[in-house]
Length: 449
Ligand code: UD1
Ligand code: MG
Image 1 (cartoon, helix red, strand yellow):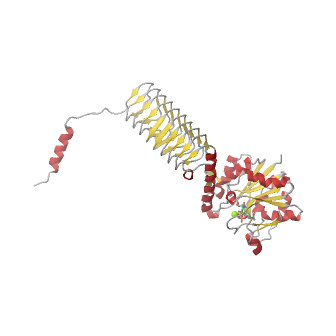
Image 2 (cartoon, protein in one colour):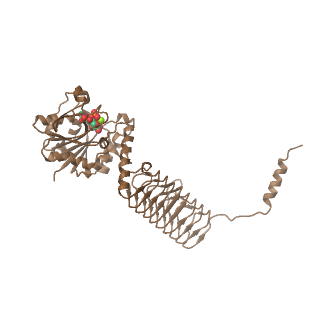
């Protein structure tokens, strides 16, 4: 087993994003770009990950620690080029790994298989492997100069001759280096070029000078899309959504109109799930076998049990736990609540910070009043209970198993099991009063002579 060090360059300013958020923290499919890159590095079996961040990028460092707690973070205090950035991780390189792979934090769609493919030639003796691709417009990319099958140089746009600019095969940015030679190669790179930067791409010519070979591995342009602007962020999002929808379909999910369903990188589906059009899955959603998510629902941080039906027009917020066969219908919002198997909340309700026991029916227009303006409180409703239409449950409050709440109740006190509770004023009928009022009004409104 060859040991792998992945170095992620994430020191970019992201000027063209026009954002106060560091570029690599912008999300695709609900996950920061740098986290996608870390996921790929971990899945590719990295023994160590080093992330190079810019000065004042504490937020990037915090996200790295969250996703990959064993990763090391290095600060590149001055931006002096991609080779200079890699050398910010010098102490990691000095430990001596078999393979070193350099990735960009703003190139979020690279798959672990591709990292593996880049490493392949190193085991066969190559010093460097570069990920190549053929963009529609090569302008701005480093061109891969090849002789026979071998890569002999990478020429940056600003340094390229006219003949080199005509080359369609470009540098995607990912590079694998022989870990035993990497430091030696990197330390020999100079800054004698148009931008006066230390170019990582010069590793190819340096290796050649040392009598070592470099290779190209070609990837689809889609996989190596780099994000420098909001338009490119949207492009990456579209590509990743395509991949995630495909993964769901291949995993046995029916997406009636796939292009209208938005998924997160971590959305998980059982088999025979049906998702109707126009549904958004935020981060942290798990949907079990044979559940149906009906049109126009918005779901995040929620668990949908087997056979449950959600929507149309439902909102599940973080901490919504729906047991088997639960029904959550139109214009219903569930937050931080456990709904046991068979619970029905079919219309126009808000259920927050609540536990509901099995087979309880929550009538239309029910609201759990969980916030008193200062603190959140919990509502507990037992099993086999019936909550009448348009009830307000003022938390903290507990309703026992089998209890029955009358329509329009304001429940401020606990209700014992199997009790009937009516929490509203009694209706009063005053015979004839409406007619007398009407007569008075019409007399008063008659035109004056
Ligand atoms: C680089 C490549 C080019 C390739 C292109 C693909 C070099 C010299 N050129 O060019 O061949 O076609 O990417 O997109 O490598 N970074 C740092 N510190 C630095 C400089 C860069 O961390 O001092 C990071 C950036 O944040 C970015 C990545 O390295 O994530 C690439 O840098 P960028 O300036 O975008 O390089 P390009 O000119 O696009
Ligand atoms: Mg770039």
